[in-house]
Image (cartoon, rainbow, N blue to C red):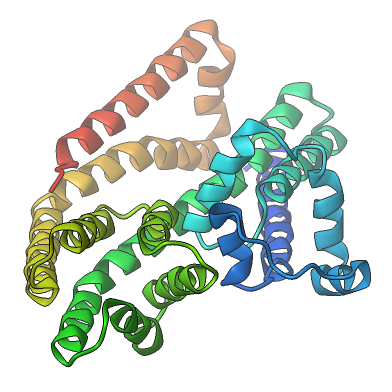
Length: 324
């Protein structure tokens, strides 16, 4: 491997590690409670105001920097949607603070690229990578949290139906779920109970929980509960039927995942193999493959290959993505 290639590889690795450390620090110092703090962004309720000294003590130095820079983005229309994404990912950052963190990573990446390579395109690429990483992390957290929440809904419905048969009210059944089950479903039910205790109607609190979680199964449950509250009926039996339906859907999803495993693996191999082969050839015989990056026809071939890679991955993902 040539010296320049080694320098680029090591520099990219260092930049990735620095970005991970910075975002990890921001995540650790951002823990300001998961109940009333997150609730106030959606229900309009306000917590008891803190003094300026207590706020600074709770936030820490790095959080104070994010808060100061985030004031630039406060009041923007896209912040509310960003805060909804952060709530669904269970990340205790405000939308303005998250935007400030993204901008800081963009600046760090661009400055790092310019200081090491003295190249504007490389600096721009590293800046984009730094700004894209927090959004990628949020999407990953959203997906992981949603999968875990969906896997808990059926058990929560069984607890609620049994509680209703034992003589508990609907709110007491919700409180039972918040106390007996583990996060994220327990924290969401606790937040809904907290919202109702602050004076919000039950229907509004349930719909706010649906907005925070973004689960289709939870939306089905809440819709059934709201209909039952209007027209009456046996709520315990309704919850049992929904729980059985959700269990069957989860089972069907697992079967589909098993049947499409070969297609997903093929897409992964198709996407990774050319890159791995190019890196191997560049390490073994740089002169053999360097012409591919210097000759105009070689650059055209790389562009066509990348376009084909993207199209192939998208087509395979479209084929194996079966909605249930």
